[in-house]
Image 1 (cartoon, helix red, strand yellow):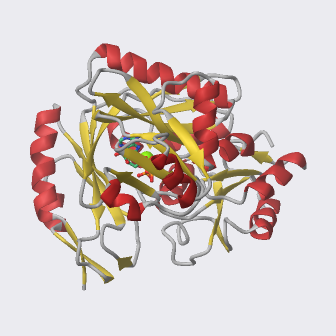
Image 2: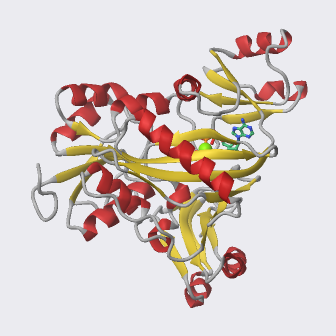
Length: 385
Ligand SMILES: Nc1ncnc2c1ncn2[C@@H]1O[C@H](COP(=O)(O)OP(=O)(O)OP(=O)(O)O)[C@@H](O)[C@H]1O
Ligand SMILES: [Mg+2]
């Protein structure tokens, strides 16, 4: 189907969380119809899309049937039933990013093997099936402390990842197929979002620096532009561009990297979808990550990724003791501040550290943004009623 704007074209989005919602907001600007599949009829995207379909993205039939309703399938979550996507591809349905790329990325074991095969620098690793195998490998000195264990499938937001520092922490080892990685001495965590379209055009957004909350074990704030040297920036950009080309995929790819204490840039993991580390692009860049994803998958020219203004992105996380119906504190104070952009995802229930929204704070320079971000962090709270 050639015309996608103001036409009968239907974009199918698997997953209706906040990433789906923001993708729909971008599609809506261009008058593109969006169909969404999600198990939860109260999901963030449900009342914004053209048509909502209730169903599980993990279920073969739900994914397969949903795809029959649309002209092109994309997703905002990695945990999609891969057999259904493979079958749809075989039958000629357009799926972007490809099920082939997704199958590699969905399984952290296959993902690490892909890096090894293509000589992308990454933490040394081995794959194990059970906890017993891991314990045996420790006894045989095949694994040494400290190390990181990652469940091969279904992990997100740090769930499914444990750092084991010494023998006393062995009880934290999971009994599931996993990747065991050397623990890296991380100087900074970086992310680069790259995009590729059918014509092999590739663009990348400026590298961002992720600052973590150790308590919640997820990204607390994200800084763009990062404070890294031009040389590190260049390395990060090159790795990201080479990975998307090697995956031969169309769409956007978020590449998470580590800058090590010894100055190396290595890849941690990738996600073939819009990503938390690209939210600032909505206000901070000429083109947002969501629009770039649409441009890539709908076969439009890719947009400029230039930075308009430096920014800090803060996740709005549920308070540590919040459980139940959501209420926000500090909204008025935030709205009084210049360049503070609130995004509320629309989740009705709050849980400790649940991602409820984000704030992008623009500044003339990064210091100005930091000052305002500290203020936002102080006043803005996601609590339960
Ligand atoms: N090899 C490693 N050495 C040191 N720290 C690591 C290593 N691997 C992961 N980490 C830490 O654990 C965090 C989560 O790991 P990873 O990104 O692989 O998991 P995830 O659950 O998919 O994350 P998310 O969904 O938050 O991106 C990383 O951001 C990093 O802080
Ligand atoms: Mg990660």
